[in-house]
Length: 368
Ligand SMILES: [Fe+2]
Image (cartoon, rainbow, N blue to C red; front, side, top):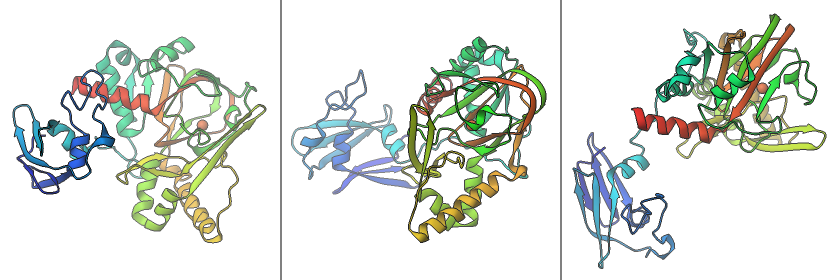
């Protein structure tokens, strides 16, 4: 996005974009973010400028925009010059908006359920982009035409990135017959909607299951849009929303030889105050005690989130059968499972959220 004008002001670089958007970038910041070969390693794109040697009172005598290249040349008082791109300024000014997410829930369920054929994902990177765009927009996707094998699960997962290793392994079988982990996931019971790995500092980003075998009744997977719940609470009660963004909730996982523990608010915001991650798992919540007022506020807010999570009108129920896989963003969607009878065997994995985002950014840069 090319600015209309740039100007060297007394307190910084003044930039005006179309639609009357203007920003002033402080001079120290502009010097610290140069993109010329003296300021930035052009091969690695890592900073070269000595941030800590910049005079805090530095100012420029002129700033000239080359509208063809989109670069701005800065002449500093003294003999130095540096360059910065209009793209970098627009990016930090928040002028490049992320894609719209489609929040869904009661009265607004995803219809049809976001679905893509495995063949398309395996064929080329445009297919992978279509898949990741679905996950980014809806928070989940069903994959059809899957082979019901461990190898096919691995091949599909690796179209995104290497799977994330946890104490459950890198790829893991999931069924009630397994007893190596002491967790409610390895039962036939109903599992209320939750996010996984609240006890990991780096909670699983994506979670994927491929249905290897199903011979029974019940056991539908449940997906719930945690971002939609958060937005509903934000609209209905600022106080409850704020409590969910402020109170750190610890999670823990215990089995012989393992004691994982981490904490974050149920709703983690990014630097701009936008929702970045939902963490909600009452099974794994570790004991913690707050002052009376905060404790009361916590139970009220956490209870309100749970009320929406348990509202079946918000549930997208997916009966996974061999030939189908399910993937969801564990930082956005809660998942659960209806109780079942019979045999149900899945094979799955997690992906690191940073690596999923990286794949999405690079594919969008390549094809969009
Ligand atoms: Fe889970």
